[in-house]
Image: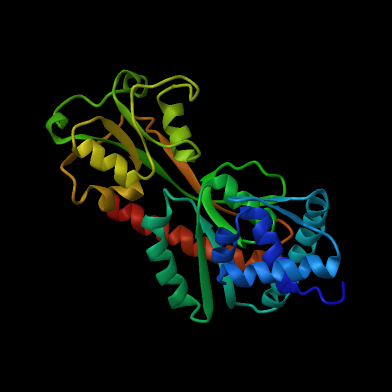
Length: 302
């Protein structure tokens, strides 16, 4: 295996993760033919086939599955070397790989990035927006340094640092502005619009309304908070959104914004990272910047 390169291992891991040459090539920022050549050369050097090629999908062979586990260990070790080098600096330098869930990213990221750039001009911020389970896995795999999520996560190998909390607000058609604000359980009898399966905000909303996620509902599921608000604007139901999203999502919509009686539904926002990450001290600096950005945003929405 003297000809195997770190680049080939990264390409192999990407293809094993995406199970599709096109998506893996896009993730690696190379062309699909270039990726195919590198994978073929890797298999030739090993003298064994790592993937079963099908028309629309690739699958790992038995050897490929075992090889993947070793490759992930190697890539984590390599990322760890980079973390050690960055940890030798008192401040934040190099690349920061930050994950954010979709119900936070559009509203908080602009302020976070601006403040990071102002405080740490040499920092290169890479942002990954996806749902919590994927962010946690990518953290554990060493592909991210930290992630901003809703707490708790409950993964023993991760640090959880709470940053701030925010309430949920009710979005309903403007014609209903004068109506009493319903209690959580009363929303079960209304056409409640939710984010699609996989979003933690969906689960938090269902919990407030005391609705079991497995039960059928008379409602619609959307892929974003923006979609839900626009459907409410069309008079097709009501929805809940977090406070930080209000100014962005309602500025062009003819809807009513209402707050619930105490105790209001809310969520805890925090930042998570691996306990073994040597960048812990630097990540605490990032967490403080995120905390300040959250306070600033809450002040604007109150």
